[in-house]
Length: 576
Image 1 (cartoon, rainbow, N blue to C red):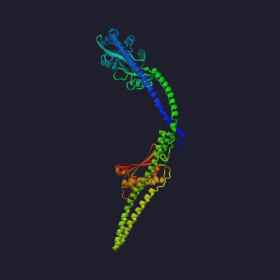
Image 2 (spheres, rainbow, N blue to C red; image 1 turned 45 degrees about the horizontal axis):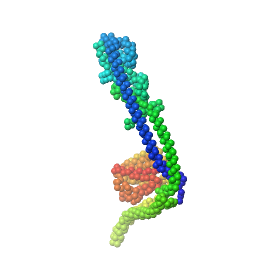
Image 3 (cartoon, one colour; image 1 turned 90 degrees about the vertical axis):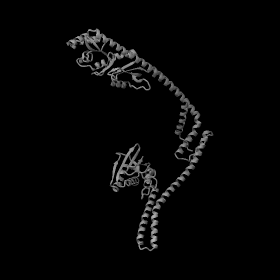
Image 4 (cartoon, rainbow, N blue to C red; image 1 turned 30 degrees about the vertical axis):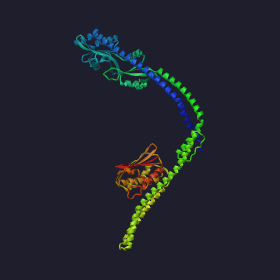
C-alpha cells in the first residue's frame, strides 16, 4: 500500500489541529469580542453624549451672539448720534458717505463689530463699514432679503470674495430715525478667533465650513468617515482619532450648505481597546499553543489511519477502484476502513457491469441505426430485381430497357451503401489528432472557399479577433472534418442563400468560434439529438457529419454547442 507523503499527512493533521483549536479557543474569542464590543459601545455612548452637550453649548453661544447683536443694533440705532446724523443728511439730500466712514469705523470697533451698514428702505447702501464699504449707492440683496425674511433674527450669511468665502453672523432690522425709514445691519465675522473661542468654551475641536466646497476640503483633509446607525462621524485630527458631529448653520439664503464641524478625541478609548486586544492576543496565543500540543499528543494515534483512508478516498475519486486500505486499528476508524474496502469492492463489480451494459447498449443503438440506413437502399434494389425477373419470365420485348433501368438503380443504391459503410468506417476509426500550433483565424480562412465556391449567393460576414493564442490542433481534421461539416450544414440550412456570420474571440483561457446562419433554426426537440450518430433530418444525409465533428472537437479537449432560434442557428466551438 502506498503511504501518504509527509506533506499530505501534515495537511490532514493540520485540519484536525485547527478544528480542535477552534473548539478550545472559540468561547474565549467570543468572550473577548463581546468585551471589546461592550467597551466600544460604552465609549461611543459617552462620545455621543459629549457631542450633544457640545452642540448645546454652541447653540447657546449662537443665541448669545444673536442677543448681543440685537442689543447693539438697537443701541446704535436709537442712542448713537451717528445714525441720526446720517438720517438727517439723507433727508436733506446733502449726504456725503466719505464724511461718515471714520465715524462708522469708530462706532463698529467700539461695539466689536466687523461690519456696520446703513441702507435705505429699498436696500440701497448709504454708508457702510466692512466688506460693503465701497458699494455705497448699490443695492445689497443679502441685507434686504435678510431683513424681509428674518427681521431682528441672527443668521449666517456667506459672501464670496477675493480671499474666498466669507461667513458672517448678522442681524438686520428696519428702523425709523429722524423721520426717515432705514435698514440697519450689524455683524461679526466667523473667523479663526471666534472658532477658537468656541473651542475653548466647549473643550472640543471646532472648525467651520462656509460652503459645500469647503466641507469637502475639510472632509478630505481629516479623512472623514460617515457614521452608521446613529453613530457619530469619525476622522483624524492632528494624528488622533476623533468622534465628530456636523451642525448645519441657519444661513441666509436658506440651504446654503454652511456647517460647523466639532469633535472630541477618542485616544483614550482607542488606547484601552488596543490594550485589551494585546492582552487577548497573548492569552489566546498561549491557549492555542496548549490546544495544539494536546491535540498532537491525543491525535497522533488517530491521524495515520485517517490519512491513509483519505488518500484512498482521493484515489477512488480519481477513478482508481483497485485501492485497498490496510486496517491498523480495532476501533470505529478500523470499522470505517473495512466498510471503505467493501465499498470499493462493490464499486469495482458495479463498474464492470455498467461498462458491459453500456457497450451492449451502444452497439445495439449503432446496429439499429446501421440496419435502418442499410434497409433504405436495399428496398429499391429488391424491387428492381423483382421487376427484372418478371420481365425475363414473361419475355417482354422491353426487357433491355428494364434491365438497363434496374442496373442503374442497383448501382446507385450500391454506391449509397458504400457511402454509408465508408462514413461508418471513418466514424469508428477516426485517426488520433496530430496536433501542432495553429492560428484558428488561419483555419477559418482556409475553410472559407468551401462556402464561397459552393454558394456564391450567401453573404459571409467575418469578425475575427485581432490576435489569438496558438492552439494545439490537427489542421486537416479541424478544417476538412469540423469546419467543412459545420459550414456545409449552415449552407444547406439556408438553401444556398442568406447571411453567414463567422466570429472568433478569446474569453479568459478559452478561444471560441461562432458560426451563425440565417436559416429556419432547429426545433428544441431535435437540438439534443443532432450530435447523435445516424441522426439526420435530411433525405440524403447519413447523420454522421456532426457526430464526427463532435468527436474530433472532444479529442482536442474542446466542446461544441448549439444555440438556435427561428431566425437562425449558431454553432459554438470552444478550445482551451
